[in-house]
Length: 155
Image 1 (tube, one colour):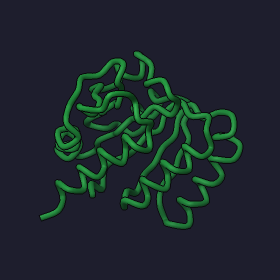
Image 2: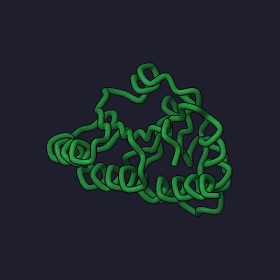
Image 3: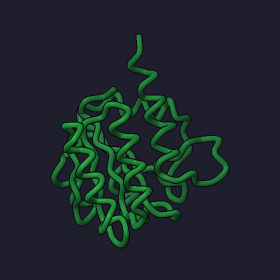
Image 4: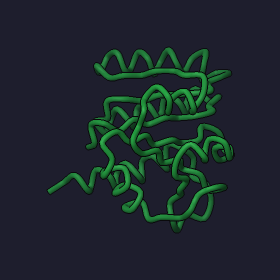
């Protein structure tokens, strides 16, 4: 898997969605997971659980106020924003190739049922998985894209 890849879950209120995304990211061997604009149950019970999971596994978990802060602080050389509302369709393997080509890619997922806002989509290249009839949610979208990325790294 890509060592420099950071997954960002933006605008999340569901503790379970935050925890499930962290479990997926760390379970696939990625080292860094960031959440931004975290509120409600995600802030009160999701953040402590994701933090505990990261510490237990020796991984990085950070919470930032906005997706813009993540871009400014992490300084990725590629930002892929999964957005059905503002993005262009690409096969999961093509999205994975874009991530694989960058040294420090940032994959941004929307944490609520609506896609990331137009402002967030404008932070990078807005794309969505071709052939999917409606938004799947961040855990499923991340799983499809990261599985495709994992497939690229296998001999």
